[in-house]
Length: 258
Image (cartoon, rainbow, N blue to C red; front, top):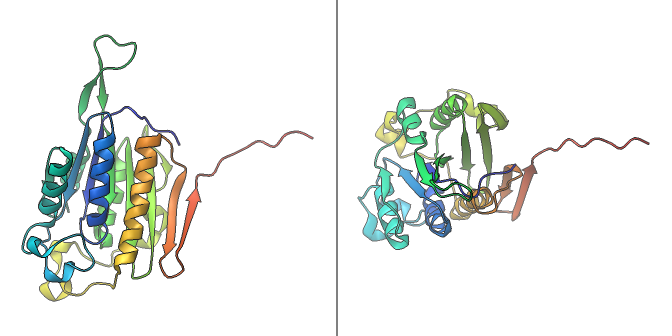
């Protein structure tokens, strides 16, 4: 599938913990390299704790600080980009739709003496650890006329990354909820709905799985923004077998007549 290499870009990432924290620095570097207007908004209501320091992209000096603010201020400053973050969990459809609404930029394009107003190419990254947040993203994805929604999920050794694409009100690549329907089953809660006891219990993950998932997300976005082409709809991986398996876009080719 082809994508514009000149349109302005806005990326909204939900979750900057185990996987999102490793995605952030590489996406800031990628956006810095693009010759067009870019925005990167990090969203997370969690604060850095000592238990996060081994697996997540934080330092002891970050403890007690909001995760989204720490990473947004750290890397936007390094690359000279605007600092944008939401220091709370995004759990409301209207809020998410507002975050994903594209702004228009006046672009100087060949053949247009006075410039052209171009809408942002919006990418939603789901780096969350609960299916209720994925269900929210799923609903908003289908409400959008145009949206790229990349969801990342992993356990201790295995995981998957799914890229959904909407364009012109049609779905070209299905989102995580269509690829893995169990994601849409009501089995868990938003982070703000968890009790202290529930919040302290989480499924085991590993640094290797988080970094692998983050790398795949960055690869997908690099292809979309830097090369203008992407054929990968889904990737599954195992860090134990050091195996990464992509599922490519299916193409319909007519057979030649005998």
